[in-house]
Image 1 (spheres, rainbow, N blue to C red):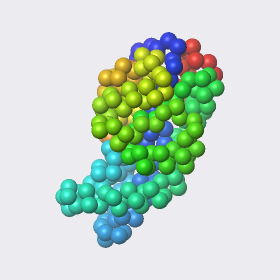
Image 2: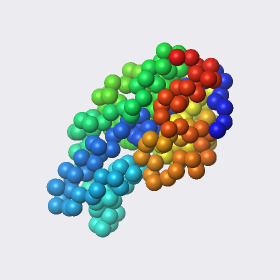
Image 3: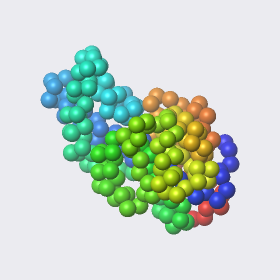
Image 4: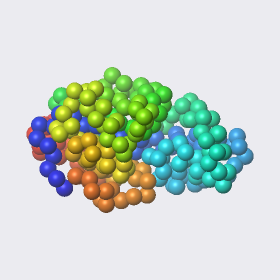
Length: 226
């Protein structure tokens, strides 16, 4: 585990699986689509595991036998169902709100870099109540590239006026670590998210944490006080 940068200026987060536990609503949308398509609903656990990979990965859990063209055809309907219900059961993970409040109290800016499409990201962030709090929100289609490319992370830093060398990038997927590393941020992998079947301790992140409170403690130790 590497020491955090001195005088941390900002913390950027992945959204689904890092800040928000959204898997229940994503699964509920899949259940509805399966009912419409007269398909067998897959178990929750394997769906939850692939949430960070997006809608296509979720659809493969139920419709892989239909082939990729069929998945592409189903995707708009799936996203429309999800958009309608996406804040019904979605909530911040335990400890996230106190962490964000601590950052705000100490004038440490925080933002979001996600591979989720902007029309879903922006509305979800608004429904959760974070639209006026996040210093920057960069979605999967904001640029022609998405994580693990570092460009979305760097764009968030630019929009928020942040120096990447004084920032952290926090996520629950190896793509988050790769994007953060390439952008020059201190990378933090979390163990409470969806993980895509991986082990965060094998991703070469600078820091691995098991709870948001651990990040708060590390920030306090580096000079950010609660």
